[in-house]
Length: 423
Ligand SMILES: NC(=O)c1ccc[n+]([C@@H]2O[C@H](COP(=O)([O-])OP(=O)(O)OC[C@H]3O[C@@H](n4cnc5c(N)ncnc54)[C@H](O)[C@@H]3O)[C@@H](O)[C@H]2O)c1
Image 1 (cartoon, rainbow, N blue to C red):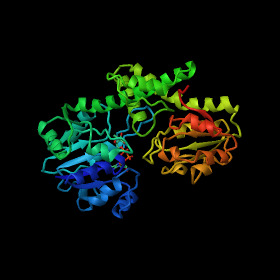
Image 2: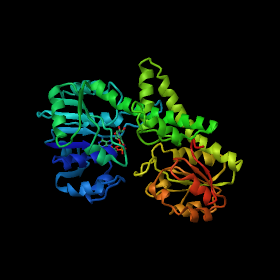
Image 3: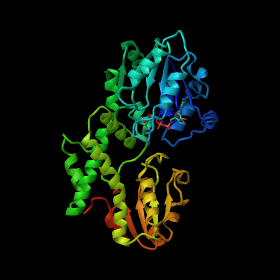
Image 4: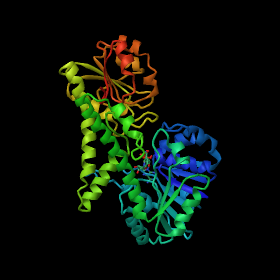
């Protein structure tokens, strides 16, 4: 089939490249010219494992443009994969989605508009009305939310746990289902509102687990238990399962924070106070800030102290720093008067971090540091020569915000080791 994808970001590029790999002809459209020019030159503007190879392998079936007409010419399905960031009120900003809907040209052929962007429940219905107002009754609408995780997005797209398709017209849902032929996964057919809610509820369930285990970790710290053992012990219970039970300094990224806030506001706008989700969000905010308390307990006031942040991306395997805990940490440390240095193997901290010294290597970031905070669990940090690291620091204090390192090994190297919820 011929597909147009609007948005050449993390989701749009992976979607486009994967559909091309499944044998479809794909045109990806973005409004940022430099991005499209780079893609045409063969440069991939984001860090995502396997994406460069996938785009390379499918050059013949994959093209890039800034032109709407070029993208939708002959397309049977138009995917929307534009950003839906939070507005000041916490609701999702759908302005980019509306632009795409309004840009669709009138055509005699039936096309299906498929929503990959994460949108509030009810968006499909409003899009449907707007299409009808524009006389585009022959444009079908399907909600086909995306569940991929950055860092493993290509694998997640090709081997998903499920494919969710919500349609007003069964025939439009069938078209989107056919697009996925070659992917072995259960397909959930639903009404549009339920498909929209599946995406928001899935993310809410995941963040609830994260905040839950983080609170257990905090109680472990207060009582002398070890959250790693506790997570292992509860994760083996089949009713609970082991995933998303890793305690740390909280979740970030471009999806979890914004989608939980959007669901909270969606509920509030509908007259329901989603108390559990409110608490999950609050716990996460406090969790990021607890690191500063840990540093203060060891170092006293942080004014003039040198703190190194190791890892800036919100998780390993991506260069994405949107809503990353590193941003909150850097801001809080700065406010306390600390001097902050930072290193990440791929994320470019200089774009989002003011007043932070960005180092070329982890060891350089640690030069003269009074403490280090492991923020992102990059394998490079597990493999770091921690003995050399210690000798670069003024004071060997390490807060392992991801419980990645072995406390005994670090202590043997003379470090004072602080994990999250560890005995
Ligand atoms: N990032 C993820 O892992 C992930 C996972 C699941 C769902 N989502 C959802 O997918 C959507 C996209 O997320 P993302 O991370 O890819 O965002 P992104 O910011 O990386 O990419 C969005 C792209 O859309 C482009 N754009 C804006 N207006 C446009 C228009 N009118 N036509 C064409 N392109 C336009 C932007 O220039 C940008 O390149 C969001 O709703 C997000 O919540 C993201």
